[in-house]
Image (cartoon, rainbow, N blue to C red):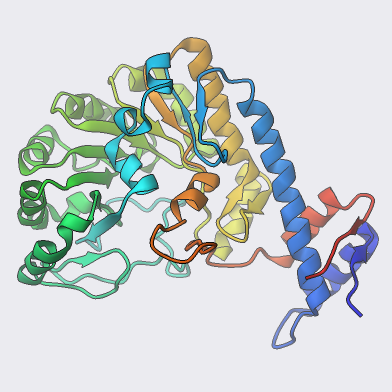
Amino acid sequence: MIKTHWTREEALSVLNKVNVDGLGSVRVPAEIVEMIMYAERLFYNQHIDDIRGRQDKIAGLWQDDTGFLSFWFPTERHKYGELKDVIAPGCHACLFGTISHVRHSYKCTQNCEFCYYASEKSSHHAPPIGKNMYSFSGTEMTFTLDEVNAILDRQAVKYDAIGWLQKEPLEELDNIQPVMEKLAKQGVHQYMYTNGVHASREVIDKLAAWGLNEIRFNLQATDFSKKVISRIKYAKKKDMWTLIETPIYSKSYNNFLKHKDRILDTGLCQINMPELQICALDLVDHFIETDGPVYKHRRGYVSPISSRHYTYNLIEMAEKESWPVIINDCSNDTKFFRGIPTDTSLGYVNYTSPFELPFKHVMYLVDQVMEDGVTYEFF
């Protein structure tokens, strides 16, 4: 018989036994798995209710009808205009269109604790790419320049935007030019995600000449280097969309506050504030220690609860101080929206977490949401 009512004490007792004994090859009973999923869902609802309460008080916040997309706009002209006409084109293509990503480098200047690709234990660990070779999102195959040209001749017109990212694209600058120029001739919007270390004025001049339309700086990768911030200001002069895209957690939040005036002085177009997504199971304890409890978003990405609250600390500050920049609450909700493809069957969302939360943390969730016990319908 399936157990559908759990008291807090029963749940903690069972989870503690599973945690102590270890899973090994033993299959966890279905009712325990269902209880865990239910506790995660209750915890998620509690977290989202707190965020919704903060959102309701922000006059400049725009949201889609479902509440999954949230942007803060500095003026009513932005808020009530067509979204495609006000936000960065790369972001609009990511949310509503068709995108792909070019991978051409296996190198990076930094070793960020939050990086998807830094840990070999992460499911996002990027496979090596040989010298003068390329790859695209969705495949581990690598291609020569001639093969890439053939692919782009056949397929580039299908894409609203193509991004340059994964590891550090400016590590292999010479490989960028022929592909970027070809995409520019085909009229494809191109954006790049960089830590900014190699983004000198000379490099930015080259990228602009080759056809880059949008550049996004991850400032936390360099602890918000003043030199990199100054390069944002220079890129803005090159008629490119200039953005900051940095995972928001305790370190990046405090760095943002420290450098806020210098950042806003760059004249940048948009700030993307993703929730920090923990990329490997062995990092969960580290981020719990630095940023507090974590949660699993709809059986998907794992993030600290505090991450999105830091985002809304900054959005509330932006509204109070009238910052002249668009802010994208690039949350796990947004990633859920982005993951709903337009060309497959209804109900399919192509995003998952690389791991399950460890049982000891599920015990924390149970402790928080099951004060009076829970009863649910097993299905």
